[in-house]
Length: 119
Image (cartoon, rainbow, N blue to C red; front, side, top):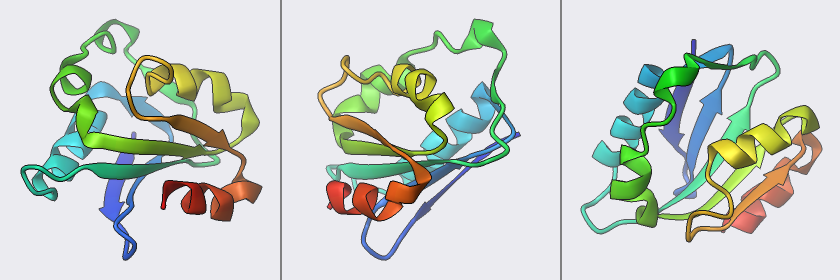
């Protein structure tokens, strides 16, 4: 299980991923984020990869690109903060290099830098 999403006081959408992430959990977080945004609003996203994150469950369903195709242009920037061992996987998972928005990985010690980069 899981992921959560919350908009902080600076307007950054903070997504936390932990445990074993399932596609339906991510779908719910993405839907909640869309509901919290205005129709023409874009988002700056901070993904926090928690210490207990174990990866993705259900390889066969992750090929669904619907959210990326329909809403990917509404994301301005994505900063990912976590253990360096997740860097390659998270950059691939977020579509770094395939989306218009820049995506950058930071270690936990660089959290303040990640937040500043998003602003």
